[in-house]
Image 1: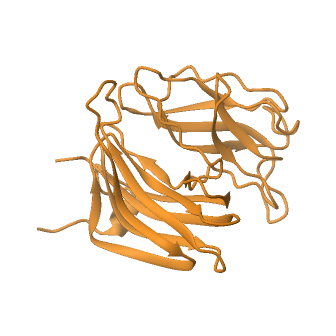
Image 2 (image 1 turned 90 degrees about the vertical axis):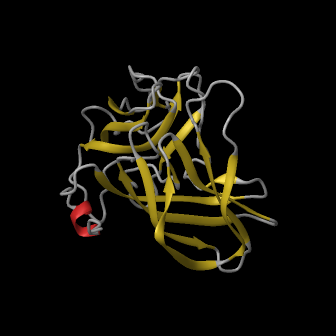
Length: 255
């Protein structure tokens, strides 16, 4: 049996296969296990309680539909039937944006998809941090600012839609070298279930007393079926810790 090369998949030349590089970071993780996401959250409402999403009020006046900052943000997530859905909303400066017309049960990524600035090493594509919330005000994700705007939501969590499975080929973990973080890798299948019995949340790997840098390659890759959440949480016994995780995913049509 011949398997497609990573080069062919990355170039989009293999029907039914897509490649994703997933990256997440949280700079201030404490004693409570926290998703390795810039916001510290990964929201998981059940399919019978979907939400509309929007950009939270309180941003920068230049991040507006005709401004010099971020003009639009595209949400990529999972809808109530398990399909992968996308929707773009215009930014509204310091005000909240309009809500999405579609309902979401997961947010897989959010990116600044339009900007009023031709970005350089000194000028970012958005003027300040952009926070994403549901219409009840719960924080779902953060596109951080800093020296330069990050442009996308840093989230070391992934979810498969109903018509795709996922293969993880490698992971890369970084945490403060002078602190001992506990980093765990979990999965939870059956995200559309709305009544017990539910699929259990299961540990895949645990990296106790982690510090510095390490990476792992998987051959064969780790397999995750359709409609599965999987990703990383971290905690530290004292003070706070900065943790980042990256992993490479190949999405395939399940057999």
